[in-house]
Image 1 (tube, rainbow, N blue to C red):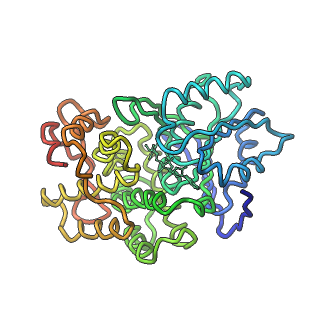
Image 2: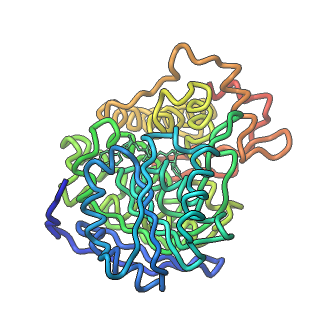
Length: 380
Ligand SMILES: NC(=O)c1ccc[n+]([C@@H]2O[C@H](COP(=O)([O-])OP(=O)(O)OC[C@H]3O[C@@H](n4cnc5c(N)ncnc54)[C@H](O)[C@@H]3O)[C@@H](O)[C@H]2O)c1
């Protein structure tokens, strides 16, 4: 499909540095994808470019993105992977390595990930491991990938034993988060991204307190409540503003703690139960849906522990209800499988697990709450 960029909003470009001295160029805004060729030139990329694209995103956007890469400058090949988590496998990883090897890719060459978070995860792992590192540029096409998955340098594939069990920290050289790409995202997928925006809304005060992130005049939670009440239109400038705020928040958190040792844990709000739900339910819930259920259960536990007033839990449930996102663990999910899966969580430390719990009011979290593994049943 051919699309015309409307260039409605400014494209904000940030050069972002982590404590590991890794630099990522991040462009956010309508039309950001048109910077692809210039970005590859800026990072000194070699001639070979593999565009790793996801089926549904490719249908709408592959031609457009390929048109950004002039044949006189780049030798472009494409590889299309299936939608969803079914591409995050060792089989696909090996197919990508084979593709790169057969076409003579060297370390100056690049992988461009075009799709949702499952593709950026797979592309990141492939780029990190082939010849110990190719250039990685991410063009996230889903809301969830724009606000979360494409930022921060984590990648992973799934193993039969659990989700995201094999992966690396490997920072993209650039991320081009273009809101025009969201025009073709199905409603349910868009709402899946809303669950991650809710996560950012619930951690905003804590992030502002412990990093260089600066809050705007209005808390994200209130902006989110407003745009959800108005039907969440991706063309609404307030939605574009929310996306930029979430990206900035993640960049500042990761800059402070790239390797997930302390502050970065805030980003896991709702994810301990969320990842277990995805694994135990064999991915019938999308990532965002599972995170939404995880957030509600973390908030319920916070209410039980008298850390959060019940009225604040109701605000969370109201947002999820209006976004048509699930709040309850699906009835047929085996509880013992869920608990076993949470026991494998990467935040486990011996016989305890660190949970992130809303604390006092929406926007603030306790990210140092230790729960004995034997108590995990309380979360389900
Ligand atoms: N590495 C990280 O930091 C991180 C963070 C959060 C999530 N994740 C991972 O991200 C994945 C979830 O990401 P997701 O929600 O983007 O799911 P996804 O990648 O499965 O994409 C969701 C669906 O939307 C379709 N789609 C995407 N963009 C589209 C577009 N513009 N038009 C039409 N259809 C489009 C896809 O083809 C797919 O069917 C999970 O695997 C999760 O583990 C990683």
